[in-house]
Length: 257
Ligand code: DAK
Figure: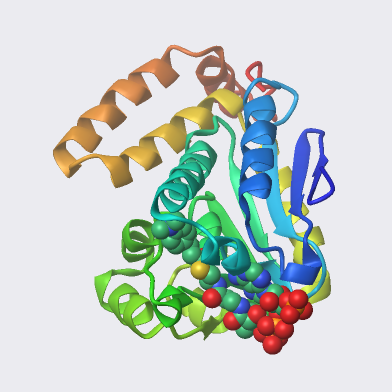
């Protein structure tokens, strides 16, 4: 599919490739992403996934407005379900996902970034939930994930005004992990990905699942989930190796990649 470029490997990269429409998400693109994520889930050789947008203007400028303008209520609901499923699949992937935000991340584009584990932004990145300006509201999880990440106070203002904010503000608000020069975005994202790819894949999987519980569970249930998850990690070969390597003052050799 031309609108998506997938480069596999230990560090795989998925590029949304519709630069003429600022990489807006239509049904075909979302279905294509769903297929790629299904393959990634079953491919043990992929250890980290990077998601980015083609061109130098946009990560993803939102759901495709031209396509949505033609949709009936029923079609709109199908589209919304598809979008939600894709965002949840990113969150449920057993490997870390890093969004490399190279430009506009608006509406469904910000929602896509919010479904990733980490976000690196270029200095040119601009974020926002401008749906209110189209007479709608965020439809791919933004009303839930945005307040979770940046707090109710800021999320309410952003969703009600539709205003954009820049990369420095996103950093200050704790939405993005790092802001880098535009030309350094992909190299820096890969550097971070390599650092994480050097860890135990099993421990990373459990960490991701436990972190997700902080979003999906009440605190008490989440704390119990962590206890049972850490018990599983304690039984792993990588726990034995990690601690042995520390005591022997050498680098660990992970079994679970
Ligand atoms: N969809 C489709 N095309 C888009 C687009 C989008 N979201 N954003 C930009 N484009 C297209 C433009 O139409 C233009 O196409 P041509 O006219 O060249 O054919 C091309 O990309 C370049 O854009 P501009 O000419 O507008 O470029 P500017 O530099 O002047 O402005 C901009 C850049 C990012 C500020 C502007 O393009 C813009 O405001 N874009 C729209 C951003 C936006 O509103 N995004 C949120 C979309 S709504 C739901 C399901 C999902 C959702 C909600 C509900 N249910 C089914 C209920 C999610 C909604 C959204 O994501």
